Image 1 (spheres, rainbow, N blue to C red):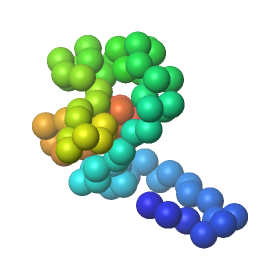
Image 2: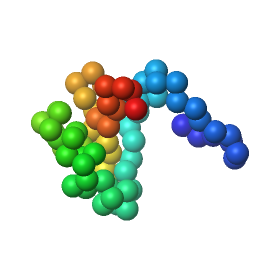
Image 3: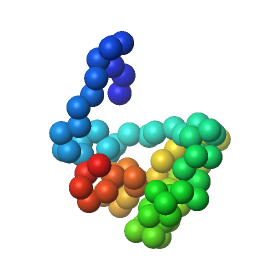
Length: 76
């Protein structure tokens, strides 16, 4: 998603924006998430890594329902 400068995004907890996307993760962000409580929760819940390699890029993994692995039960 891209927003115009100064435009904000307000989450309505619908979860629609958290599925069907390939979200590339830059090395700095991946480093921050690696071994964090967030990544450990994802691994514990899904039994799979939080990231996957695809064509030389790293992206967030998806749950079996196609939603982002970082989306929790409260849709946050």
